[in-house]
Length: 124
Image 1: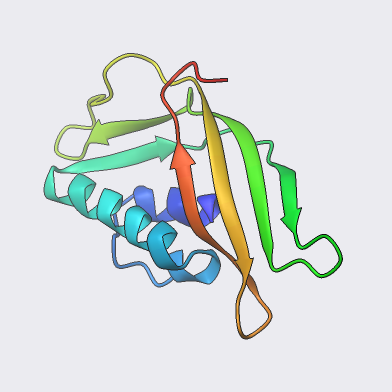
Image 2 (image 1 turned 120 degrees about the horizontal axis):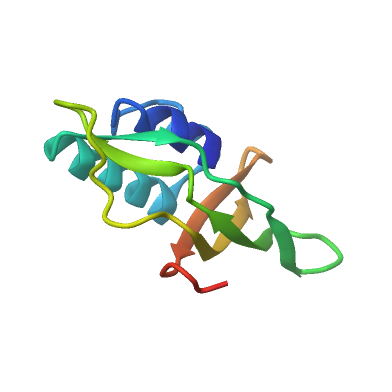
């Protein structure tokens, strides 16, 4: 999901069909809304986050349909820029943030992120 978001963020393409490959529901809505706001404000995102996701819970254990993934994502090299002059638009440096994501088995057997939360800088 984050890889698709990184690619869409380079142009703030809030309608990218790629976003729905690995996200659905609230997660897909939040990704699209964030990119729409960036597009409306003339912002694009450069770089990539550093991620090290780990499964923190599986439900039910014997036949999983829901998994919670936790990460301490680093946005130090993943910042917003003004599209008009390529100047840095992010106030202050990026950094490490706690990320929790809910990943659910879909009716077609695929797995997609259905919701996620990204906490403030320094939360992990």
